[in-house]
Image (cartoon, rainbow, N blue to C red; front, top):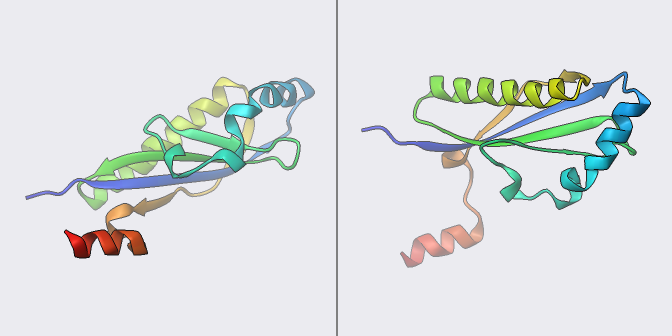
Length: 121
C-alpha cells in the first residue's frame, strides 16, 4: 500500500542585472506578489512567487505537490525548479536559484489545534 504525501517546495533566489524596464515590469505585477500577503495557501500546484523589488532583489517561489516515494519527492522538486525557471525566463530575467527546500507535510510536527482535533476524533 502506498500513501500519497503532500509536500511544499520553496525555491529562493536573487534577481541579477535588472534593467529599468524589467524593474518597471516587476513593479507593475508587485501587488500580486507581495510577500506580506503570502500565507500557507500561497503554496499552489502552479507555483506562487513573492518579491519586494524596491526593497531587495530576492524572491521566493512556493509550490504544492504530492509524492508517494522519496524518488518522487526529487521529481517534484525538479518540477518546481523548472516552473520557477520558466516564469523567470519568460520575463527575460537573470537570476541565481538556491537549492529547493522540500517539506513533507506528513513529517511536519502537529500544531496544538491539530493535536486537540486528533484527541477528539
